[in-house]
Amino acid sequence: MLCKKLRPSASKTTMVKIMVDPMVKAILCPAKINLFLHILGKRNDGYHILESLVTFSNFGDYLSYSPKSNGSPLNITGEFAANLRQFNIQDNLILKAVTAFEKHFAITVKGDFNLEKKLPIASGIGGGSANAAGTIKLLMQHYSLSENTGFNEMLLSLGADVPVCYYGKNCIMSGIGEQLTPWPDLPNLHAVLVNPNVAVSTAKIFSMLNITNQLKPYKYTKCQILKVTNYQQYIDFINVTQNDMQIAAIKLCPQIDETLAELRKCEGIKVTQMSGSGATCFGLFETAQKASKAAAILSEKHSNWWVHASELGDVQPKV
Image (cartoon, rainbow, N blue to C red):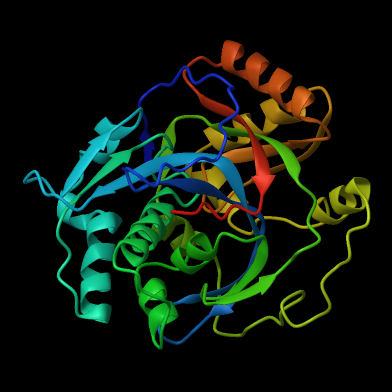
């Protein structure tokens, strides 16, 4: 299905602290949020050229690695495990990342991974890409390796969002995902993430867009980064940007429009937008208290939606 119902969630709005236990080799794979997403054109090989301001949540999946194998290379638990198990496990980006790592470094990886799946799948917040990036981070630490020639190309081969998820910094992501321009002045943001429990086909949305090979110019990538001196300046800026995939995504899944409408009703809301190809949407608030209150109200009103209050900013969890 192109717009698929996910398992209902009664997720609470508990804030999650970014912590990693080095004894068990575990890492947070944070949700990636596209604060804006502009599609500038399409290359002759079919890849889309984009420009997006990306930040990260302090909430996400948890991935652990054990060098001692128990016979199952990938175990999946957590809230959305059942949704992920519907797919062929060999197609999982964690195992694909292992294969890419082995080929790049000429190493045979031994051991097992355990994924606690807390993010909805096919939801526009880079869950699979974050898992792939986390896999590479864990293996880099275990084998005491450093990034080398061809490393970034290896990341990109796993998906357009994998490089940005690996480095975990506020940035402008451009090209097909390989160009990352740091945006150090982004303030920490208080957000509510909402998914109406539907999975959206990114490929279908791209097919609905009238994208040509005539490339539009970058607006931010090769220009001086906006110096954000206060919170309101940032809000004013983000409110004049957009997600170029949002209209098509709403046509495919009208629940996205309902989600955005519900966010706009929240007291203290400053910005509403869809992330990535959807269906996850976000709302920005001035304080964590206002975000938590809005999340609690939305969770009570829509008990079958996935709702989570979150802090957004640089996220570089250490292994």
